[in-house]
Image 1 (cartoon, one colour):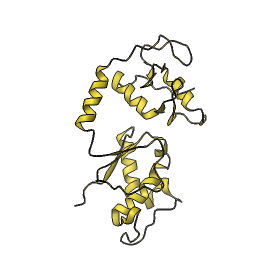
Image 2 (cartoon, helix red, strand yellow):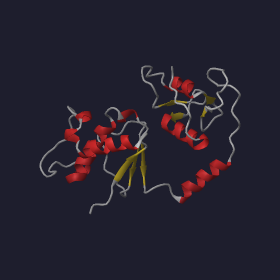
Image 3 (cartoon, rainbow, N blue to C red):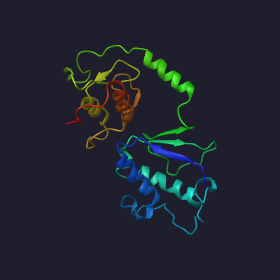
Image 4 (cartoon, rainbow, N blue to C red):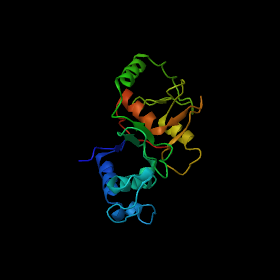
Length: 207
């Protein structure tokens, strides 16, 4: 039995994860990948993938970048974790910039202790109003906060700011903090927000 080499996580629902998995296992039958090159069917995995990786793993490594770049997955805050030791076979094309690539079986003790230390440090309370629009916060919708500076803003306000280069999209992928210019990943902001406050009772997008 082949050991698990890598996995993808961060899907918004189990259904979304299962659809991704089905397309990964059946790329030739997926409507999302229809017409895209690079699948390289071949016989018995004769075509070799990155760094000479062939067989089922080679096909999976050729298909994964196409999936990560295809709708609807290309706009999801996904994470890819490698479980195999280095050197790692490169993915061609590389994953989108907002996809976080990790190594190892999971957060180690050092990372967990560091996370606990960060949780013990109380962040300064946000201002009484949104730093971007100046209006007050709704009681059931706490602001999103930059992890480095005191910026706090309504989720729709910060989304509009990060959507500057992509005004027609509903939600951003990434962008600089409007205050300190720290590169922000929208998915990470939402994860931190949910860890601190729990799921939001309402869903709002930039209007």
